[in-house]
Structure formats: structure tokens, C-alpha cells
Picture (cartoon, rainbow, N blue to C red):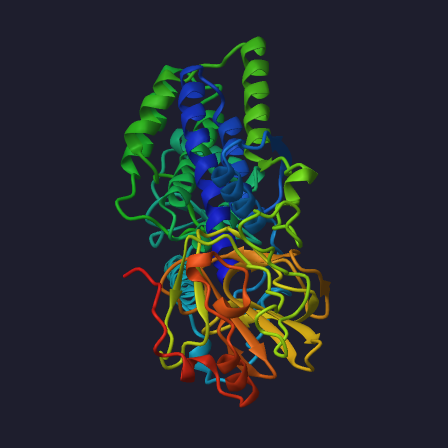
Amino acid sequence: MEAWVMGWLLLSLWGGAATLGVLAISALLRRAHIPSRLLCWLWLAVGLRFVWPGGISLTLPRPENSRLAQAADRVQAIGQSPAAMALPGAESSVVTAPATAAPWYAHLTVWHLLAALWAVGVVVLAVRALWGYHRLARTVATACKTDDGCYSGDCVPAPFTLGILRPRIYLPKGLEETTRQAVLLHERTHLRRHDPQVKPLFYGVVCLHWFNPLAWLAFRQLEEAMEAACDEAAVRNCDAAARSAYCESILRYALQNRMAPGALAFGQGSVRTRIVHLLRYRKIGVGALLACVAVVGLCVTACMVKPRVADAPAVTEVVVAPAVPTDPEPAAPAVDTLGLPDLNDPENSPRLLCPVEYTRISVFCGYEGHRGDDLVAEVGTPVYAAADGTVAEATYHYSWGNFVQLDHGTGPDGCHWATLYAHLDSYTVDPGQQVKAGDLIGYVGRTGYCTGSLLHFEVKADSTLVAPRAVMACREEDRLPFTGEMVENIRAGESFTEVETSLPDTSVS
């Protein structure tokens, strides 16, 4: 669910950026007296940007700053994730159902709340639009068909076009012949350009992004461009007197209340803007028109561009701690991280590889429900396998968030070892996959129930919890001695949370 919400927000962000860019470009093109029909194409491209997760790929240089590069990779992964465009109730192939049985409400997260709020907003707007459409259609149901194919009657308050599959033109009684012909040309231009179908579709897109004010701004701009384009078609061959009469009709039928989203009202929009535009409207030359078409085509292409950051060089992937230190300091013995811990020889036992480059270890020994060490690190920090093994689980848990569990098999002492890595931002392995010590398995995050960005690390020997700091190659000041007493407790099946409450807590409050 988190991937879906983040993917949809990212898509809305791209649409908002396209809206701001087209808004600035259209203001400049207006000064060049561009035909409003071309502006309609610009705003239609913006609407497509709001719902199309793909686009024209544009590769950008990779930032030299590692944090910016990680952030760019994260955004890129969200945009490319299939979960981002799946249905709200469906999870991706990576994030599956929780491994443990729990009440349905235990699986709910803030992401489910956001998705539910989004769905409620979409339903409310859709019902409101359908009700307005039905009410307007019922109001003009008694209008009669005229000789010119329109519908007229006392029930028609103002000229408008209503309908999607079979749109009809409604005109009020009492229109003078000159004004009637101009208004009729305006409404027939809507029909010829399929505006009765385009406008409801664009409104549907806006309903999906109701939380984004830039989506509503794009919808209003499309409405204004549609009306201006039809106004231009209606007065193209008219003299000054006819234009003035047409402007008077716009002022006469200016709507104080907006009609249903599926209706194209003659008097809707900013009356002042439409009248000023018509009074200043003039045809432009062929050269200027071709230049405007080229600019619009370039802007439409820019709206469809989806930038991506260049992939990291292959060398950067080898950022793992060495399995065997090749140049140990003479004063300290080398730490063996090639095998599993040996309960038969704890003093010379191999140590598991430290799975993450941490800043500190927050430990809650004896805390009820807490089962391991929290290795504090920034979101996006790589997490590596502590030893060779098989991916037993890679899924989502309501408490652990995204987590990976590795089965390391049986060691030389006959003990079966396993490790768990929780609260991941994302993981890069699948169940059943074989991994080696130091292989990348995921990235530090803050999913599930946690108080910050960290890696929750657990170690088990024969299903008994072992203190990670005792068997892990961590920093010297954080290390616990792997003593015979601890081995006896493990043999007895006593978890470290039950026997090590007297150990100091290295967490920083």
C-alpha cells in the first residue's frame, strides 16, 4: 500500500509540475495571439501527464552527492514500481500478506488511511457530478426540438450543450436571429471538436487527483481555452458590430453558478477575460502560426518526458565489508567472519558480518516484546547478509514492516542459525534465493512500528534468541563477550532478553 500511495503522489507531482510549466508558456503565447485551439492541446497533454506513469525517457547525469543519488534512485524506483499503478487494495509481488496471523485491523497502517481518504474524495466528487448532471437533464426535459436541430423552451435558462454520447444543444427562447446564429456556431464548434466527451474525461482525471490544487487549475484553464477557441470560431468572419453583439450575449448569459461538469455552458468562465480576448482577437500570419505550432509541439513533448538518473557504475556495487580482513592491525587479532558462530569454541568462534554501517546501537534488553538490537542508520543505507544462507522470508509484517529472514543452516556445533532484518525501506531478494555473506539484501527504512530510521537485527540459534552484539563483528565498544555462560543459556533455550537484563544499554537517549 505504501508503494501505491507514494507512486500516485509522485504521478500527481509530475502532473503539477507540467501544469506550472504550461501555465507560464500559455501566458507568453497569449501575448503572441496564439489560437486558443492550440492551447487546448497543451492542457490535454497536462491531463495525460496526470494519469500516464510512463513517458519519454530522458537520462540525466548521476549526482555526485551520494545522498542525492540515493534519493533519486528511490524516486525512480517508486515511479517504476508496478505496485504504484496497481489497484489500491492490491499489494505488489514484493510486499505480500503478513507472515503471521493477526486481526485484520492489525495490518492497517497510515498508508491504508491515506488510500481510504483518497477513495472517499473520489467517490464524493463523482456522485456530486452525476447528481448535477441528472438534475440539469431533468430541468430541461420538456424542451422541444427546433428546425435547426436544437432544443428550446422556457425551461432552458441559458445556451449550453449537454450530453456525452449524444450531446444536444439547448437554446433559450427569445434569441435574436444574429445572436442565435453566433451562439449556435459556438455550440456546434464544441460538438465538432468533441468537447462534450473531452471535458468529462478531464474532470474524471481531476477527481482522481482531487487533493492536488494544480489539477483543478489545469481543468479551469482547459475550460477557458475551450470557450475561447469556440468564441474565436464564432466571430472569425464577423465585423466589429457583430462582435459587440456577440459580447453582449456572453454578458447576458453569464452564469453565476457553474453547471454540471458534463455541460458546456455558453456563459461560463470569466466573462471579462472572454470579452477582452474577443475585442483584441485577430488572425496571425502563417509564419507566426507555424512558430506557435512548433512551440506547442515542443511543450507537449516536454510534458511527456520522464527524467531518470543514470545508473550507478558497476564498481559502486562492490561496497561490502571484506569477508576476511586482508590487512589486519598487528595489535588486534583478525575477526573471522567466514563461518557461523561455534558454541563449542566461543572464544575463537567466527563472527557474523555486521549487516549495516551504523551510527550507534540502540538496545532494549529485557524490554517486553523487543527482540534484538536496533542498528541506527539513515534511510537508504545498504543492508547486507550477515552470513551465507537462503532467504526464508521477504515480505511485509504489520510490526516489522518490510523484513527479510535468512536461514543459514547448521553450523559445525550442530546448531541451526537464522537472522532477521526488519524495518527495511525495501529489499532486493526473493524467498528461496541463495545469498552470500556481504550480498545486498535491502536498504534501511522506517516501515512498520519503529521510532526512527534503523535496522532491527535478530540472531537465532535453534530458535533461541542470541545477543547480536555477542556474535556480530561490530565495533569494539559495542561488542559483548561470547562467554561460556551465554553458550549454556543458548543450550538451555533461554533467550538473551531473559538472561542479559544486567548488560548496559548503549542507546543514546
